[in-house]
Length: 133
Image 1 (cartoon, helix red, strand yellow):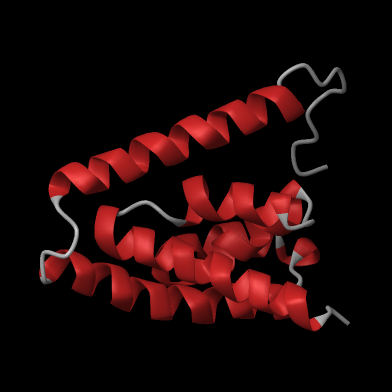
Image 2: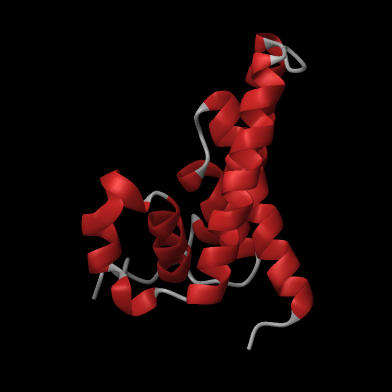
């Protein structure tokens, strides 16, 4: 069973992704994946959670392919957080709390930080990639 703080973390990940999807249209891949991996999920478990997040209608084939890697509790918490976050993010843009320039800055900083993280933790890894075994 996942401990309480992990549950909170996964909900926050979904909320952040949802806010981003609702405001700048990016979330499940660029935001959720690195944060789920940082939170302790494997890349396959992270992909499975991201696929569930986008399940209807676009990701049904991905969910079927990753069905053996789905961890239901973190995945469902991310989905709930995403619903909440999309509402907040889209309202923040609609009500002009976030300017277009601010949105570009958020995207730039996030992409830069995650790129540096992945470069130093995964770029020079020597094992072969595991493509869906």
